Image (cartoon, rainbow, N blue to C red):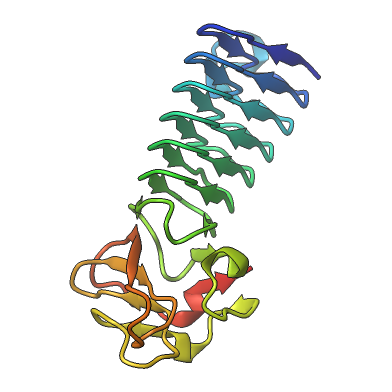
Length: 233
């Protein structure tokens, strides 16, 4: 189990093909942190075997435009981008990974497991890939995140009751608080999915006039999105 601290400057911290639970801290600078696998080993009895990183790793980018990579790993990893525009990837990973962009316009890519992706502040690009993924929004005014492959069968959108407001209750979003259209038509409706554009909006008071709807996510157009695909936490 290794701890690697980058400190100030642009660091390259690498524990690829490791079997332990590692902690990688990039700190300041534009860092490259990797706990990836998938090496082709053509020697001895393991000829033709791909090697994956196991263990539950934590990669903390810190300040700077960082790259955090756990591609083709098997553990349940935690990847924290921090400030600036980060690239965070668990592509091909088998575990259930948690990816958090922090501040900046980040790119987050999940893997084959049931991943949790939080863009944070900024206009983020989110890819869940395979598995039952959860896309987390801790506020409606933190930017517009693009969910490129949201699957209404397997994936969920999670919103914060405390940070969104509007009288949301913990659990699946109430049917009366969701509408497919361009704007709220009742004072109870809070979330509006525009079927023709894919935009997802929040309106704190529905059809009342004290609050204007705010776009916080961009999904694909034409989805069969329903209220139970949105979970309030």
